[in-house]
Length: 374
Figure 1 (cartoon, rainbow, N blue to C red):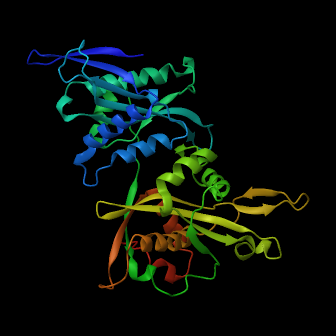
Figure 2 (figure 1 turned 180 degrees about the horizontal axis):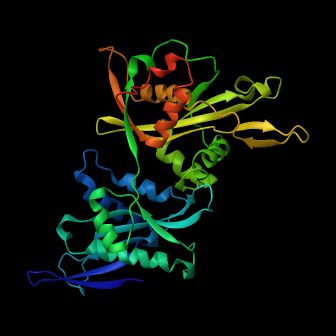
Figure 3 (figure 1 turned 45 degrees about the vertical axis):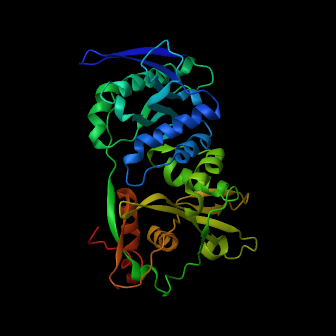
């Protein structure tokens, strides 16, 4: 249902806006994607309309009505027949997120695509939309077609934290990231990286979905709070489209990786790690990473698989092997200066596990990452 909003400026002028959700048709959604792209066009690598369209259509839980917009007629006449233009936007993302190992997952209303046309900024439009979005989230249990969302979450620069805190009562949680120099000449050397038999290839969907889904549950969803609980559809429709050919997996066979399976004639290809990176601002950012921290052991009596944490893979080994493929794909080489390096921006919790595991490998594994320079 649409509602009208009137804004009075200090110069005495009055401006009429209409708040509504997007219509479930390609034309209205296309207008919104073009609007978002125009507002974010100031960025060094500005997103195109197709970026916002992809985010919307590939989301298994997308809902056009949850894209909340304020529209404005150029002649500022509420009764005019002139076409309205979108001038401000807020989108609600329906997500199920983890709450750590001791609590069950919850439904949340993620906030994103917050933007306002430069000509209409400093008029409180984002505040109007955010308050509207929070009301929808609070009332979600009584709305047809919506899961009951118990909280709202968003990612934002620290610069905007006071704004979101004042308008929506958001409390900030700081995520810790590390910037690590990567020594390219060691990553691309032809020397053996150890006696573990592993192979790297690009992820294949939907073939790899069951394994990646299970590994993500154990590596991320069951250990950390705030991780998106990824359904099979989320992997196949959203993750595969967003990461494309940048998602690499490390595979091995049960017989080559686990001693207990050395006599198993029916050994199958196993995924033991995955990675995706992207270049941002002259450095690489870790978009996806995980490793098999469990082992596939079998019950001696039933022969059924069971999960155990007794034989985890080595994080440093997995990261080094996968990162070499990802950097090579990105065009990095060792030509020129032998001391050449690039920087990788990654969550500190991941970096700490890599440092821990690198310390138990032989010395040749410890020279790939610049531990002192991180």
